[in-house]
Amino acid sequence: MPIRIGTFIGLIFIVISFILVVFGFLKLFPLFIATPLLFLSIFFLISRFNNRNRFKGFRNA
Image 1: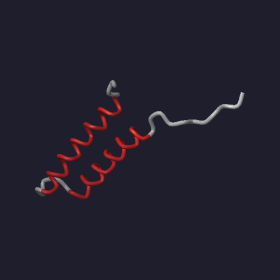
Image 2: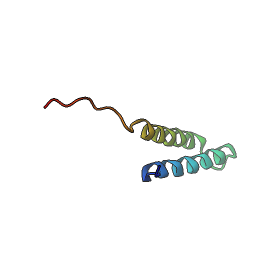
Image 3: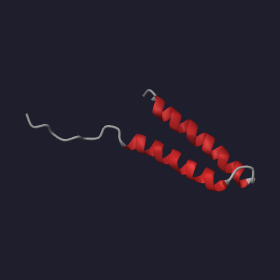
């Protein structure tokens, strides 16, 4: 199963935002900015996985 570029970008954003959350816990970065970024990156990746192979219905000829 090949990894697509959107999934790879989503994983990179999750890692970066997780590092920013850790910096937020250490008071080096604002936590109120880092936590929504982590939420949005996880939401993006889950929505990418959820929209695959969705049944679009039968087409009328």
